[in-house]
Amino acid sequence: MGEPLATALAADGLDEAVAALRDFALIDCETITSDRDPVAETDAIRLHRLVREVAAVRRDVRRALVAALAVAFPDNAINNPALWQRCAPLTPHLLAICETEFADAESRLQCGVLLQRAGSFFHGCAAYGVARRLYERALAIREKVLGPEHPDTAESLSDLAFLHQAQGDLAGAQPLYERALAIREKVLGPEHPDTAQSLNNLGFLLQAQGEYAGARPLYERALAIREKMLGPEHPHTATSLTDLAALLQAQGDPPGARPLAERALAIHEKVLGPEHPHTATSLNNLAALLDEQGNFVESRPLKVRALAIREKVLGPEHADTAASINNLAFLLQAQGDLAEARPLYERALAIWEKTLGGEHPITNRGRRNLARLLLAMQQPAEALALGETALAGHEKVLGSNHAWTKGSASTTVDALEALGHSDEASALRARYSIGGTSL
Image 1 (cartoon, rainbow, N blue to C red):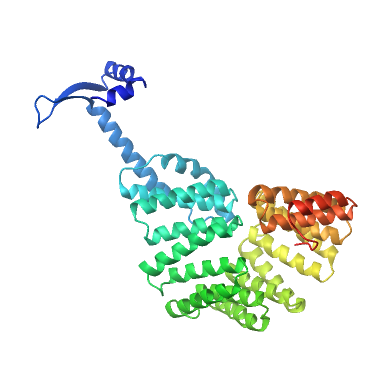
Image 2 (cartoon, one colour):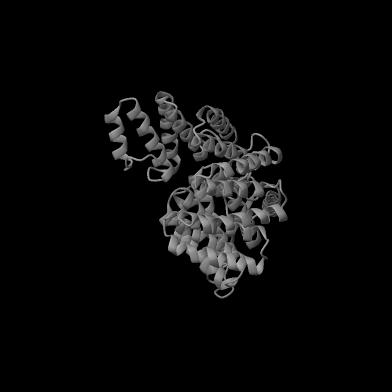
């Protein structure tokens, strides 16, 4: 092996390993003379021909497995629990095959795609720590193979930013979104649909931070790009209309928000059909806008129709169906019909527990919603049990500073106070820095 490498490896049992391999005729040792200096000699190890062939076959098998997984592993599983059952058995094979780096760029890139998809799966399941590691590995591969300004690198940045945002780390998400936007503007152009997506992403983040003035021009620019490049009736145009409507509503401009939400609904009904899941989403969005205005009379038929679509198209136990059930329960509660609201909240929670799992943030949000109803029904003991479970789950997955964690803490505080446990309530209020109004 030559010095100083042989000396460095001696302590690792190199000589014993070489001797064992020579006993099985898997390797041979030889001395190589330099072409430039006949006096210079180097000890070398030569692999047996069959060993080299087996190694080559193994490399080919790994490449074939990566290619097969690229076909079999679902894309964009983050919001589709129906795909998680397909992802789960494939994920261990994916992680094993991508554990070591490939020599060829094509296979490395395929591994990057697979790691991104696996990250999306874990993101959807709320296994945020695992998702983050996979997203970061995919980003590192793309930066190395494709370069720091490739559109696929921007995609990885956006996915990682979205994960940060889901965890409540808005400050950590912002530079990632901004870098993705800069890449797309430079490489794809200022009017590319992917650039519009980055504008929308950054606008949504700024809105979540309460920076409405900064979010609005980003939403408006994204909408203008989509109307120009995709057309005024494209589903992505409808997405921009929906997001801008939500911003206007948050800014206290319901008259400006409603026609945008109605236009988004009209696009989905015309382009995708009256029973498409995206149409149901638009119905729910418009209903939520009406809820905030206290217009429950107009809101209710929209929510009922959205629920009917999702039950028919997605099935009675889909996570989105549960969201519609939860939304209808909220409306009934707001109208004072607590008895009718309770079985709906309970049904939504049962669906989420089954489809998303007991520790998913959305499942715990369902527990928190039911707890708030039970408080209104003067049942604080049951509310406390649900509130504490939701609080523990949210803190575990999202951290103590996330808005949903604080919401569960506030509900738990209200239950404690209703039971006369004022000292415990005060301690919890101080721990999570929450005021006197429930979230």
